[in-house]
Length: 223
Image 1: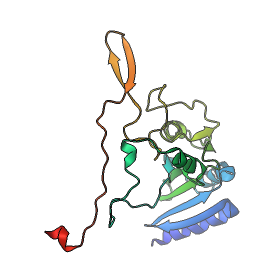
Image 2: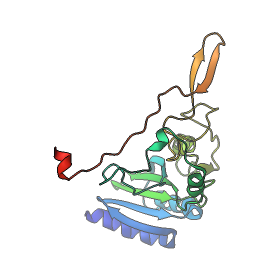
Image 3: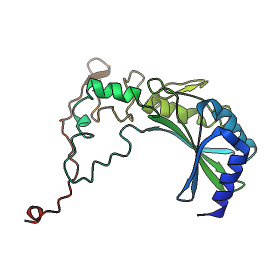
Image 4: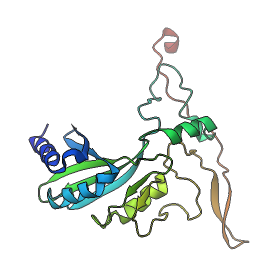
C-alpha cells in the first residue's frame, strides 16, 4: 500500500473531520463517503485546501442486487436474468423503491500538482426520488456528467442550470442503467418516411433469457 495514499487519507480526515462517513483504501486508491448535506462543503475543501482542482468523472451507481453473483453458481439461479423478457413484479418494484442506499453518485478527483487521486461517494437520502446538490459551482465540467447520471439513473442534481436528458430522446420513459429497467426496453424508434418523422413502436426484438453458467463437478457432467 502506497504511503502517499495513507498520508492522503490522514490529511482528508484532518481537513474534513466528521464530514467523512467512511474512509477506505483498496488497490492503492482512497475512497471516502460524505453525507449529501455536507457534500458541497467537503468538495470545496478538497479543491481549495487539498489541491483536487480537477473533476475527472462523475457517475451514478445502482446497488440493487449488489453482491449477488449469479454467473458462477452450483445451480441455476432463478432471479437476475429474466428482466430481458419480463418487467419486475409489483412486489419487487416496491422492494426496490424502499431499499436504503440503493443509489450513489461517485466523484473521481485528481490533484495534478500533488499527483493524487480520490474517489468520493454520496448516497442520496431518498431512493424513490434520489437528489444530491450539483457541483457545477465547484467544478464547471460537471454539467454534462450530471446530465448523464440524471438521464441514465434518474438521479436529480439540485441547482443544475439545465438538467435534461443528454443520451436518450427527450420523450424517453425510464432510466436505462437502473438495474430494474428491462434489458430490451419498452419501445423502439425509427424514422417513418411517409409521416416524415420519428415514430415509436413496441420493441420487435425477439425475447430471450440469459441463463447463468452452472458449475458442475459431478461425474455426469464429464460424460
